[in-house]
Length: 134
Image (cartoon, rainbow, N blue to C red):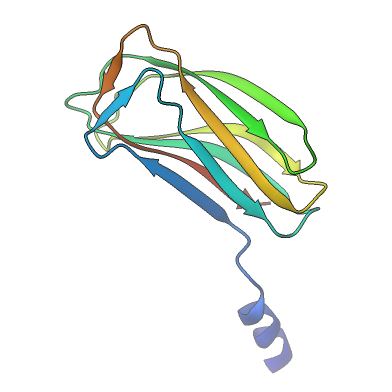
């Protein structure tokens, strides 16, 4: 029983997250945040999410964006998303990939493009990538 407890207690948490903050609460149209996450252990399956925190009193318009993921092995994948703010909590989480495993160690980068027609998107606090181990 003690051995099982020690194995569970010593297993590392392989969930990862990284966020980019907008200090003035404005996401400028051509300022594309780049979020980097270090992949230390290839072969682990993750569910990847884009998370956005916003002020629900200000951010009310849909936000079209593209998320471009560049893996350590050089693979590039992109996904177009249309976020629609509206929750009272001011937080949205959208799935980017399910059951994705990296084949190599290294840095995985996510470039997030604001595809809005407006020069500024008000009320955006931060954007982040959350990777949860399966």
